[in-house]
Length: 119
Image 1 (cartoon, rainbow, N blue to C red):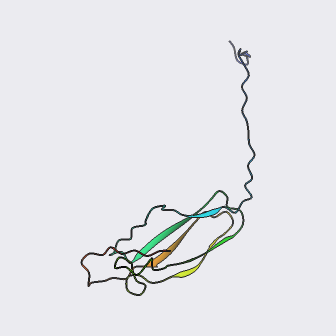
Image 2 (cartoon, rainbow, N blue to C red; image 1 turned 90 degrees about the vertical axis):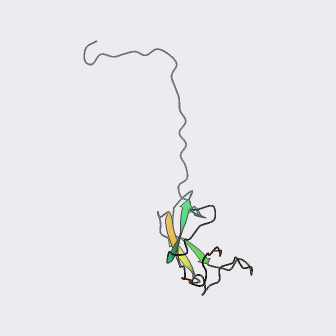
């Protein structure tokens, strides 16, 4: 076959379906880590990542705050183990990631530390 020659294919035509999706949704906000986040006691900060999924249209604001889980010995205390934070995360139009920074306070009175707090 020379240049420009047409090749005729035999067989059934194939079809595909194209779905036009609605991308005008603000999305939902999720914690990036779906399991417990582990903060190393010797690190001065704990970074908690938030993801915006299933859309990123418009501005979305999310309020957050740290909290004590309960009154047990395994609950981290604000002002003793970490610095309490609260505020609002703003996701601008098209943005899908944000983070919360929490200061972890050093404690020299404990050899081992295994305490939790919530957000």
